[in-house]
Image (cartoon, rainbow, N blue to C red; front, side, top):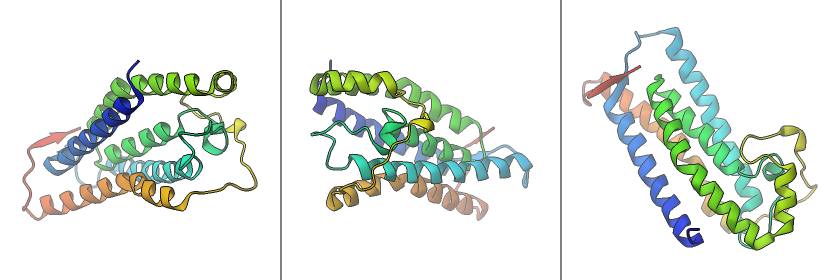
Length: 203
């Protein structure tokens, strides 16, 4: 098993690399669909919805996990419906960014990259939690899905103590989907103005 710190550093490096690849793709590619195509509008609308859900979902997760990750096994809020809600909402947001480009190619690439990398990260984090929390974590695993939420399991306390500094620091990480959509809109405007060249067209 890879050490906890090594996994955390690897995840950060991969996330930054992933963001750079997607950001570069947004700048140099355009879609092949005709202008004002119904599919384009539907892709874009669905993309915006997923970006919103992904960003809000990540903020919801940070609200519960911020400041507690190293000391407690969090099983309330988003962590009551699945064991990896942060990654689930990240996938929604990333797919939303891809769809906002009005293509199917970029969402497919994003899904493939996510599927190739994150299962190993999830397994390693699960091993760390099992070592740390033992039988408590095993009991949690028996009733809580690993990735896809089961909303009927949702449990939320009346009150929850939030660590403001941790939440504020981590909240910016939840918004990068919105920034990438803004980058896509900027790139589209620059292409329409003839300032930015189109190096590839995608379906």
